[in-house]
View 1 (cartoon, rainbow, N blue to C red):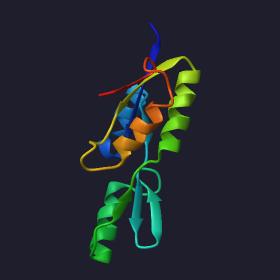
View 2 (spheres, rainbow, N blue to C red):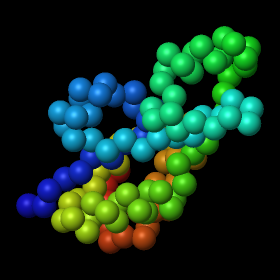
View 3 (cartoon, rainbow, N blue to C red):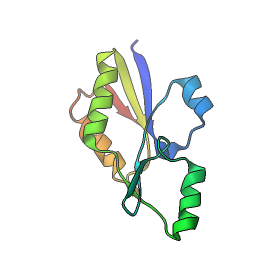
View 4 (cartoon, rainbow, N blue to C red):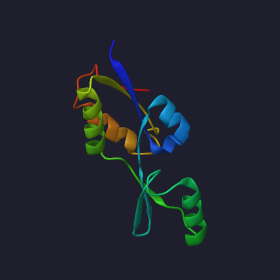
Length: 115
């Protein structure tokens, strides 16, 4: 039986404790306020995001994770002997899921799984 690596995106809003306890890899979506770009959960946290919404009087735009980012991440773990399970944002509200599907097509069907 191979090892399993769980990968999700920052929309999961998992606690740092849970991420560390279960050794989950979290890929950040992009958050754009005008010309300012942040990586969700890396450069900006939820509290700061809400402060900027109030300050700017507008909601941010988000940007999906690219297929290339997923390819690099999946490849890293597969090369270390893991199967990858991606649990992420739904396809109806973000292009991120589609990016993950494109990346999955670069690997054999028995290494990358979606839930």
